[in-house]
Image (cartoon, rainbow, N blue to C red; front, side, top):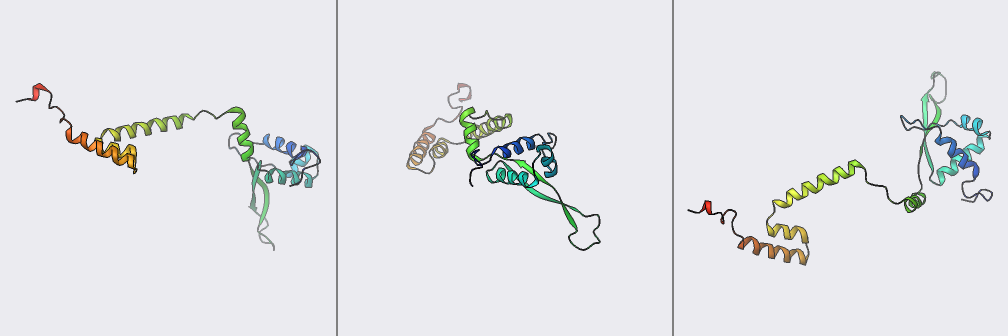
Amino acid sequence: MATNEGNGPLGHFAIEVLDETTRLIDLRTERIDPPIDYLTERLRRTRSAVHAALKRLRAHGFLDWIRRFAPREDAETFGPHVRQISNACRLTLPRSAAELVRRLLGRSPPSDDDVTRSREEEERVAAMLATLSAEELGQFRGGDTSLGRELARLGRAIDRDAIPPGSLNPAQRG
């Protein structure tokens, strides 16, 4: 897509449209329903200029929308029985911009849910590993490789030569 009068691929007006659109977010529902008539009046531009700016924002990955329709009140007339209402929009972030943000700010810390989920998974795996024989543990750790087969062989020898639990306890001897 060609640049817009030396102001980059979006142009300064598309940035204004994006800025105004972000002000319309309903923080309870996270919905954005920017009527073009509102944007034209608020930004004092023509309908075609607003529409072109929205299209540039969509083409470059900053905004997306779906068309919405509502039933017509005069459904008995000829023609479509629905009318278009304002589009439902959502803000998006292009991959290149997301990478730039990550480089500038670093990775975000994991969420509490992710930390809890990871801790629970570690505990579950540790409990499962505690039930394995030395042979099974060697196979699990080494996988289906020559190292895994060798660890399983060593584990088999350990299992075979292992002293049964409780056999060293003098209280259990006859």
